[in-house]
Amino acid sequence: MSQLLRNHIEAVSPLTDEEFEYILSHFKTKKLKKHAYLIQADDYVKYEYFVVKGCLRAFIGDTNNGKEFIYQFGVEDWWMTDRDAFFNGTQATINVSCLEDCELLGMTLADRQKLGKELWKYEHFLQVKANLGYTSLLKRLQIMIKGSAKERYEQFVRQYPHLLNRIPKTYIASYLGVSRETLSRLYNS
Image (cartoon, rainbow, N blue to C red; front, side):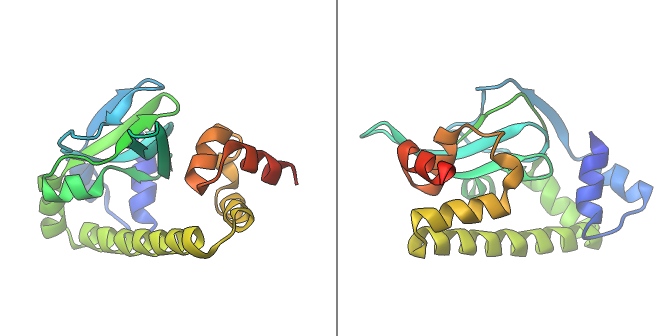
């Protein structure tokens, strides 16, 4: 379980065994079953989570028409939380649920900040990951605004080929902002 986290951090900042054990001591293990909620709208979010095993979806529900918009999936080696609620101590505006049984490592904001102050390697890791995440979000926004349904689908296939057979097509359609029928046409073309 911990080796995946170590590899993830060391892709940016190599660590000694002692440094990694110290970082790991700030995480708590959490296991959830398929369909369970990690975060529900209106919850206060105390942790950000590193996905060790499983698949999750982050989504916003529209209570007026019963639809939802999935804006992120999370699988092994990815991070999941409601970032706004986590960093600002506010209630969540999103839901995060498990598409598979999940094993996660959670860290509080206080521990995140403490590690950032104590270990420059961890702070550097956080900075690099934040920049990569921001860049990825901008690319996603650009394709959602400017891209056709076909272009959005093709980019998803290029970027996440390992998710195509792992995530139900209904959820992929929601992520792409298209109907299930439109996705079927794109998938079969």
